[in-house]
Image (cartoon, rainbow, N blue to C red; front, side):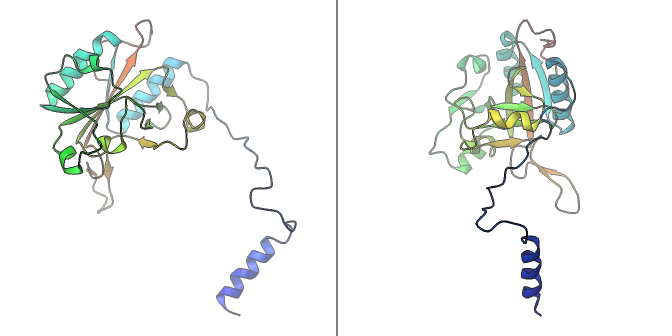
Length: 228
């Protein structure tokens, strides 16, 4: 008996109790796994997000809406950024205080042209606290995927607590699967070669996350300081 015959015999035995004509998607699949793990307040969920982002070597900042333009200007100046790509739906007031040349997200831009840009500033679709993950879906304040993959410095603004969920199961119903989803957990890095961590291989070397809190949010801190 050949190896092929052995494998096919095992398949036939495994399918012996399946009714004839039943398709692979016909039987109902139980979806009784937990969507929420533990009990957390919105403030605790945001704190967990900040902790896990920092664990992935992202630099995390908190600020209130009125402080955002000054904070972004300071972060870009600290990088020595002169040119910044901004998606078309990004609030222009966010970069009004920054002494930079703001470039729009243009379909005609090549990878080489984007590589010459110093920084990119975007919003996000949502953030997942338990995994420290940012999800971008190509929305108006996020732009096309490649503007967040080619430039070496990405600043992502997350509105908290509105855009923060606790777990991946909570995130999925809020995302449209037909959109170009980009899941970001920290700056781009790989350890494929001799387990040496190398950052900036297939995305930004530096990821900064601004947790933009409501003025009345008691967990917002509103001080513009880095927390990770």
